[in-house]
Length: 256
Image (spheres, rainbow, N blue to C red):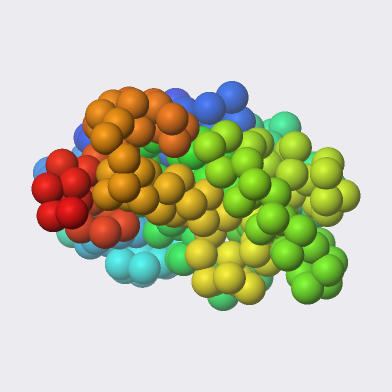
């Protein structure tokens, strides 16, 4: 079986996000691409958002449809045939150094909630703002986490106090981990399970609530409010008020 190495993807990439440890890409397939055997240098996860294909690996074929999550070890040879058009994949490439301790690549296949985390990653890719890299990292670590949680009731109240006291700051997960003496993956994973909201979205919502209060009860300009509340600019605030309350800052102020 002949194969070739590819450092990219065979379809057309419409969105991407890259850090030192991972690269996330949305790849679209609208016409036929190579069906040859190939492999990728990095660990690779592919979530099928739309469409699908017939994937061949050593000694087996897999029918891949929407909602399916596929994992590929480094250098794992495969090929894709009979791709539906259009198809769309969320592809994640991970560096070797992303994995350590209780974060292991082999653990993903054992998790029932992987599509939820992958959907969160997809939405962060669309949003791409201040918290996005941290939020994507949290979701990726949760996907591959095999550790055991500390009792959330012992640390979540303290975490909420920190976040509300320092509401206009960007607090890195590593800093929270150090202060609480809880593994960062435990924080991101079990905070979401207990509160029904991801840590990053909780932090965003605090800022949005503060901004709305100022829009309704102060004479500060929208730009001043955005910067005071820790947003990068007015458009950043506008995106998030639209996301969480369905109105722009100008609309919120005009209705006071």
